[in-house]
Length: 600
Image (tube, rainbow, N blue to C red):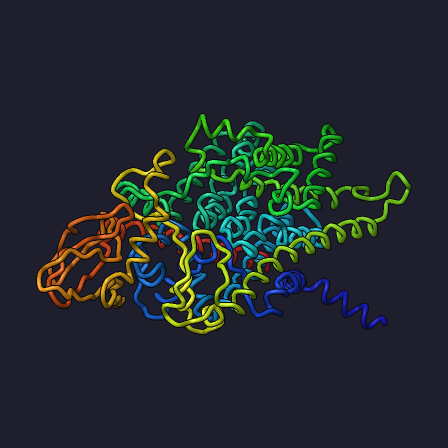
């Protein structure tokens, strides 16, 4: 018995214990997917699967193109990854390349997202003085929390942004504690977030502003903090030049279709009724939030400025995410909110991070917190029992959500006439004489992305400025389906598409008429897109509302090559970004080597 106890203690104290806990927890959370050998096909699954499929094929074939989608999205040459988490897209593509099929990929990528969330929360707690055990517990709660788990059950990319956001708050909370900006920590944290999900980075920056203001007011070295802040901004811009530089270039020279304007923002808030309370903030998570709020308010004068500041920011963003805010009126006054914010529930990620952090700090520093102190029983056993109860109920809610998605996918696999549980999605598997079972389980990943198509029009080029006022009249979803998806099957013989080693795309088709005819080819054109038809550079005869090009095709065989001209400006952008990251890694390695040498 003593040997068993010693062995358990050794495991508990080992460096790999947090990984063991988080890994086992992740496998338990995903057990329904693993045991049923299936995946969840949800709102954004097809969109992100196409992104990852494109980068996986780029890696596999060595035909790289940072801009054009030459493999995903039916090889239309549209831009997606360059504007939406480019680095994460290539990481996902590499994981897909190693995966046997889409089921294995979704399990692996979901496990990775949860592990990143757990460790980022664990490190955030550790640097803020939370004990190791409570840091592990907070990491565990966060990885199965609603803000991260939306990736598992809905493939919403906000879940991936939530997974890495605590890394940014490591530098921000250190700044609040020491009243000195840790330039490298803040810059790298924000850079990682921007490289992952731009919307999440904007939310995180908004949450950091009041913390920065408090730090600037309290510090005695205001000039140094301002100077370090400017350095951090410049370094962040350098580390993310490939994101914002590319955005500026593309948006400056093109009209792009934005994300759809959410006309009922009030419906997508944290509320105490309906499915919102289950999918955005689960009841037991809300209980944690309320406990921390109660604790901070009732002990306000006794708590230090760090806890008070973090508590105020967390509470403010919790309110922002709820229907207490008159979002219906605000979206009328400020229509841009319908496309920029879309879903106010996104603000809830900040309370998840800061309230869990504060709970860990409270439990570490107050031995009477979350105990039966009124009954003269300040036992930590009761604390652990309460937290386990919260933890178990959260897991149960996650199991229910996963099982719902699993049941829908299993029904699809068993019945090829099942309705796809995805809005704006169409099935073309019967045209290729394939089944949903083959789409999901085959090692040929092209089956799924070619058979089940979602008409998401985000970032497609268009001939006019599209905003929240005219979005509906442009009909982006309908036009995408008609002109870039359905049109593939309209011409005799169809279009044959091949990706070249230089990253360009070649489209071949036949004009069976005896005269030159106009053909709408299912590829899109941006301002920097170069079109070469039968060996001659051309301008399209017409460009549709979703960027589809119409060209004059000669009788017989026609060959159209589509490429994206980057130019010297883009080379500078990628060079600056690469050198900045190399410089950061080099600096960290040298500093660690010097610290290790000086400590010997």
